[in-house]
Image (cartoon, rainbow, N blue to C red; front, side, top):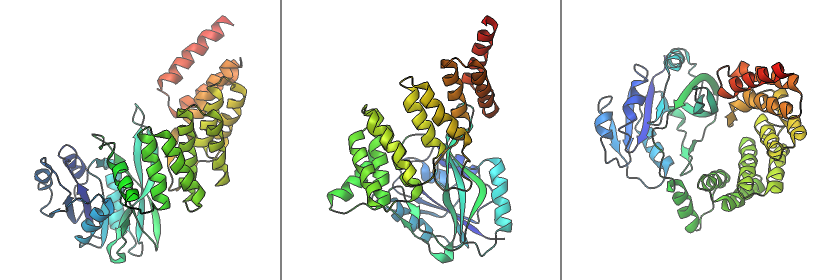
Length: 359
């Protein structure tokens, strides 16, 4: 059985840290908490679980803090969590099993990160992260914001999910401030930096600036294929936000340069046409989304509803608008197979029953 150090960086997490650490009892052989400047009771909470608490002066660099936390580890493997992460009972059992059975030749274990949920708790947004790594490989974190662990060797995907349960939003300008300080110092952002800076600009509704940096990222030709596709998706959203429909559609179609169509993009194009009542064109793209095979073990962002529920519920609407009630009912039933208690599915079912009674 392997041994594992849990390494965390925290700041003002008194309302989430206990929830996180209480969800992983009996798994880690040591817990290392690196505090980057808390002014609340975070350290007092941490002391309930460990005496290995360290201070690290915040220097606007998440990788620096994470690397410092990893430097304190002494076990065979290192795992990281954020304070607003939790591990479900089911995934805790899987994690314990992994600890007992992992081949020591494995260098990195990727685990799914569930970060978006609908009202019923279904996972709507997920992706894989490098979660467990062999300490002897001395892998380093890079990038000051939206950091990632540089990795190599034998990498496996595990059927284990970490659940992100955000309790409060970070300062909306924090990440932008870090990126813009780097730019003001005359330094160039990496391709990953360009991509995530553009996302931060979009999140702060600086759409034209976001479009510019998404473009620079894509034009660099150095982006990871999954980030390229997502950049097209987000650039299209930015164009839509400034009412430039033509450019929005071009951005969506540009994603096809990098890989076969993804359901997320097909649904996005479907909405592009549905929003101007071109239901026939919308049908094509929503139907295409239903025929695509969901990527397995893909490390990129996955909007899970686009691979099932969303195109089906939208096809029900489009077919109804075009007067084909039989197909509308068929697709609403298919949407119900994904989300049987969804309010839209139930509303449509009642609506279609009324239509049939009148026929």
